[in-house]
Length: 467
Image (tube, rainbow, N blue to C red; front, top):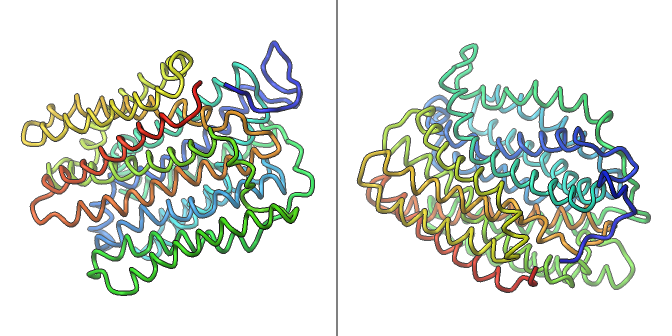
């Protein structure tokens, strides 16, 4: 597998002479962990939020999907801003804004205020996350880069998996009487301490010469994404009025226009938001699509599993979170072995992970009518499948991407993942909320599209270049 072109590095340490270290990775991955955690941690708090704020089902979907949509819509711009203004600077700015938005979430008096603060969290995460992949891609090389990408995938997955357990424990502890609000307020001290360490641990990297922000592209792609997800979330509740179909049609036009504009701008020697040359590399072109398809099955699974456990089985937030630990154990075990397995079987590690996750979903469907303990084997397999996919995914997709395109490439890859999460919540939500039976029947039905997305992932893995 080809390696990303970067300046010469110290062969013994695997780092460039700009000061990257283990401390660098810890500070960067803390940002990844808390932003990913906040996407998923809200799932176990949904019943409490509904009761205290009087939030309807659509508002709850927006608490989850609003974060993901803002994140997905802003990641490409965030990556380009890192190239333009400096990746360390944009990482610090994103972390500071995320910390402030977390405080606003924790103090939110109404569902609308909470949704607005979650959108700001998503924008902040969009500034932060592509910088992490960009800095790793440029500051590490060789075996240390491979280990850093694995650590990134581990932080990404554990933030999602253990978000349920951490959220449940915080709600159960009811720190200072804050209840569900503690899941957001905990980010404030963590973010502040991490922010204080950024300048002394994260090396500054050269900016890309001549880079400038494509404002037109930013506006068009953001409008296209909003026009796509908005009707998917609101359509079911409103009975699919005409404007929902018009919005879906408009999204197709806007996103197609965005792609055409990027190609024209690139041919004229401009600075497109997404460098068209990135997609000439098959690993990146196919891998970004695979990342989007696979993540359709992630956030949706976590959200509707949490609803099933608490509303269908009557578990508390903590009990629900403890059950998620089975999923986390499977994820951790698989992700620590995924890189070594990928070195032997290459792209097929992604197909393996998708197959294992689908098998776990099948086991869950057979366990729904039995005791809680019957869910554990299926959850462990679902977690293992996620670990086999997420841990090696970034390295496989970014192989062959030149360092000068690191910010843009990281933005596109992260966008594919986060838009997949947001769309998955909306699409699987149509199935979940469309079932007329109980919550158990709704969750069982929601597993069918999740398994279909896993199957599509396994198929797309066959199109990736051989490792």
